[in-house]
Length: 117
Length: 224
Image (cartoon, rainbow over all chains, first blue to last red):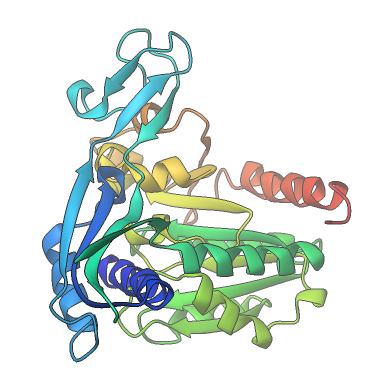
């Protein structure tokens, strides 16, 4: 249940951006979340809706893009999808150590709203 | 309706606080270890033994993270370490902010080693930095050999893995070698120490690791 802390992080980032760009009526917040973070989208939605109740962000919806875990082999340099090889962090081709190249993401990508007049 | 591209780290605020904590630890030359593991894996027992073994060599402080109660903090302070209890009142992990708030209760100038015992949990603590030098995790043998594959982030973030309760091995279907193998498949860089806190076995290499790591941090010289 780290979703509550992550939802608070989203609120903090979005509130800053809303102020900076003079936005109101934020309708959509696009997020990029890697699978390695084990964030449960439903739990995140729920925590977010509680945090923004009676604030200017109430009603904004979260649009979550899930990023699969991918690795690049440090030996043979090939890239691969982690799920297809038994959930291990070793190269499926040569067994060498890998670098995780995606799956750790936890970003606010874009905010949609109205411009302040 | 307009779209504002942002691309900002959601945990940016925590990372910033963690960096501030780290700067404070470095300035005061304190080695900081974030100790993580499941409830019942032996985090507090390991700490008790570690403090007893090293308290003549290092000045040790402990931050105890628990959802509630001061049971662990009482156990630790009986061993002779300066202890601060953080009760998270439900939160499943410690973060940079909670550590920052606990620091005024510790005099960093009078410490060489600070161990933060995280809330017992294999998921959430891995995601939140607090300014530590190393993440160390403890897994007890009865938890099984499937934990690295099921909870990869914690194994990946950790530098050291202690495999505890090796004294129970005769009664279990798992063995140390298999747990080691599964752990290396998730993080080949792990340093692994099989130990039994109950039987007080295998702990010397862990104590040596702390002393070596502390010396390395001191030898690194003053921090810019």
